[in-house]
Amino acid sequence: MNTEMGKKLRGIRGAITVERDEKEEIKKATKELFTLLLQDNEISVSEIASVFITVTSDLHSAFPAEAIREEEKFRYVPLLCAQEIEVKGALKRCIRLLILAYTDKNQVDIHHLYLGKASSLRKDLSKGEP
Image 1 (cartoon, rainbow, N blue to C red):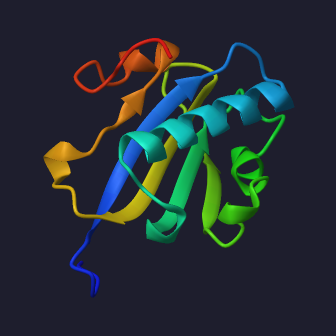
Image 2 (image 1 turned 90 degrees about the vertical axis):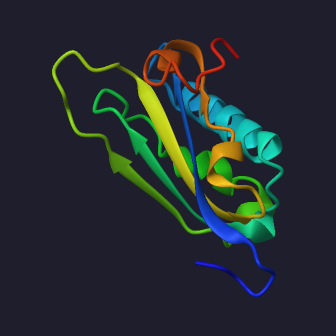
């Protein structure tokens, strides 16, 4: 889908893990990942269509979307949290983001980030430790 400006809607993926199921740790990790994804892809607030966030079932102390909403400039960005499906042996304490944003970048030029232990999810795309 193209906008009037000729930009394409792209999905930008990322994941990060936390050590503990604690509200402030979940919020801090979410903010870190979200900020880095926007910076690395040169995305402004007005270019964000929506953000879909999932967490593993062992995280229930905070809504990650709450961390993003704390910044006034993201007040009107549609955010949605959901629980990741449970798969035996899957990575624990993981927060995943899917940002849908308009950009001039081609699909291959999008920077996806898999930080910390989440780098094991997509070794082909991860940058490793933050």
